[in-house]
Each structure stands twice: as structure tokens, then as C-alpha cells.
Image (tube, rainbow, N blue to C red; front, side, top):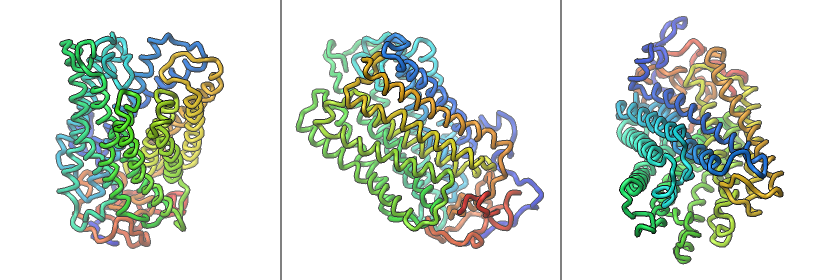
Length: 566
């Protein structure tokens, strides 16, 4: 488990790291350091997340009353803005662009990603995409829903569809550039001894995600381009009034957008694998099965788009095939959940904040996955399509899955990224508040959908008001919990305890360099001689590079209070 360590710097000297090596805004805006680019993504993604959250709050305020606070046209623009921002500017990029960018090179023993300039370009593409989408929203909004269904989006909507389409097109290029970088880096820049089956499961998940991005995102770009071309030239592609086929748009859109579900949740699954192993201090159960299940999800994700078209003139026989495939795609996810649960058995579990998020992910993702079987069933889907049941299912998978995984990863690696630890008590309290608020928000929506409440309606029958009030109250609680997290993360940047190199007693390469990492990641190229989750006594794991002031001995203080290790 040990590896060669460099000579440490003087313990009273502050070693250079990626945060203080080069000052000024220009050094950040022109940086090619993957860690700094991850921080740039963190700032920009967090901004758009808060904007999307404001729109969610306005939606829930409107639905407090059966008559609604806003007129239907304004309400259409509200939920479209919420969906577009959250899907394309938060859920898709959050985990890969922030945690993936920061950790992937370090986890495999590389100094950076394969293409640092392209990595920076991907962030600029993301920012420009966000600017176009914000302009589209401010200049009158978009009223098509985040799915942009034709022919309404191509011929009849009077909103800023073209600007939004340009933003989504550019955002797609940002994802593609990141995917290229991840694939090439994993193939060509692994440290000596870092074989494929010594890769952390975080890497396997991001590798599978990158494959989905590379294969699926160009289809979205083509679909958006055709939508814009028809809107400008009035050539019939999707509009039946001009000889087009609106169902063709749905096939093309969902061929990307259902795999995009796994672009959002697969990286979070990789995070949860790290959380479960590191917080139970145990070699993960069924490593190869979890790794291969990530690739299986990437493959199956491209075979199930048709379950979105069960009620859209699709052949009943084709619907049966897509229903069967939609059930099959649940198997790799079930393998992950089973193996995570088996890993916890007889583990030395630390119920610190990252572990709470991992357990929250499993619980919410199970509900989301199980209700996915309902909408994959032909007979049931006919009745719950376009109801609040679908909204609840989607949010349990995407928000309950992706957001829980993202926040869990942020808490696990916050000390590594910033050199400061967050306050554990407030972090646990915020997580519990979020979990309660999330379930109070979205579980009533399953009942609303079952009772027949359509989604995207600004008004509703009075008998649904109690459930909507519960949902709006839950959204307020959820928002408060997220705001707490943002507040104490910012507070910790100045007031948090100094983070040691390895506050969790974990075996990965990222825990063998100082917190925050040196600019070069590793001053001496690491040689990997241990398995991915081979836990060993903390004193046998040496730093690869100089320690920070927070480190005592080799890897820092290992008390329960400072390390979180039980």
C-alpha cells in the first residue's frame, strides 16, 4: 500500500497549490489546470442551479392556489425556464464538469487531462450556452417545455425558441469536448500499475458517461438544428401541415434525451460507489460487476427511447419491445444497489455527511427506479403519461439521484478541493432537511398523477389543493436545506478547519497528495501497487508530494472529530 514520497517542505511553510499558484482573474480565465477549470465550473453551475431553483419556487407558489397566481402563458414560460436551466445547465454538467474534471486525472495518477486547452474551451462553451439561454428567458421566455416538441416549437410558438436552440447546441459541444477529454485521458494517461481493474469506480462511471455523451449528443445537435432550420425556412420536416412528421422529432429527441438521463445519473452512481466504500472502510463488494454495469447502462440507455412514445402513434408491437428493454435497463442499476448494500454489511461505517448522502441516494433512487417500471409498462403508462406521476418519477431519479450524489461527492472531496473542512453538525442537519423536504415535495405528486392531475397546468380542480400545498411546503424545506449547504460551504472557505491530506482514511491516489493539491498533482509519478479499494492501516500510506500544514505525521490527524473516521 505504500508508495514513494517526495521530501516534504518545511512544515511551517505554505506549499504552493493550485489555488495560490498564480493570482489574478486573468490567471483563472486563461488557466489550463483541470482543478481550476473545475472550480470555474463549480461557480457557474452553482449560479445556474440557483436561477433554476428560483423558477421552481415560482412554480410551487403558483400552484398553492387552484386558480394559480400566473396566467397560463406566463406559467408555460416559468416551467420551461426551470426545465431548460436545470437539465442542460445543471444536471448534465454538474458531476462530470466539477467532480470529474477535478478528480479524474488525480485518481488515475495523471498531471492533467489529455487536452487542457480543450478543457478550458469546454467551460467557455458552457458559459456562452448559459448566456444564450438566459437572454432567451429574459427577452420574453420560452413556452415550449424543455422538450421543445414539434410542430409547436418549429411553427407556432412566438417565444425565443431559436436563441434557446443555439444555447442548447453550444452546451452540447461543451459536453462533447469534456467526453473526448475523459476518454483519451483514461486510455492514455494512467499511472504505471493503474490497470483497468484497479481504476476507481468513479472513473468507470465517468468513462461510461463519456461514451454516452460522444454517441448521443450529436443527435441532439442535429435535432435542434433541424428544428431551427424548419422554423426559419418553413421547410416541412416535423410540421404535418407542411408534409413533416412530428413523431420523427420525438424519436430523434428521445434517442438522445433518454441516454441523457444516464449522463445525469451515471456519474452520481460513481460518486456513491466511492462514498459507500470509503465511509464503510471496506473493499467494495462485486467491483467488476459494478464496473461492467456502468457500461451496460451506457449500452442499454440507447435502446429504450421508445417508451416515451407509447401514446404517440407507435406500433403496439414496437411498444412491447421497448417495454421489455425498459425493464431490462433496470438490471444493471439493481446490481449496483445490491452491491452497495452488500458492501455496507459488516463494514466499519462512519455516519458522516457523505455517508448520509449515499444512503439518501440509494433510498430516493430506489423509489425513482421502481416507479420507472410503472411508466415502462404499456398499460399503466397510457394512464400516467403527462401526469404528475411522471414529474415525481423524473425528479426522484434526477434530483434525488443526481443532486444527492453531487452533494455527497462535494462533501467527501470539499476538503481536498479547498483545503478547508465544512462544519459536520450543520452539514448533517442540512442533509436531513433536504431529504425530508424532497420527499414532502415529490411524493404527493405520485398521488396527484395517479388521480389524474396533468402536468404543465397552471390551474387545477380544488380537490387537488391539499396535495399541492404539501408539495409547495416541501419545496420550501428543500430549498432551505440547499441554501444551508451553500452558506456553510462559503463560510468554511475562511473559517473551516484546515483539511489534512486524508481526512477519511481512504486508499485512493487523491488522498495521497496534500489538500488542496499541488499544481502538478504529483511531484513524483506514482506507481500503483494496490487494488482500487484495498484499505490498510493509515500509517502505511505515504504522501506523494509535500504535506500541508494540516498534516501531522504522514496523513494527518485521524481523530473522530477531524477525520470523520469512526
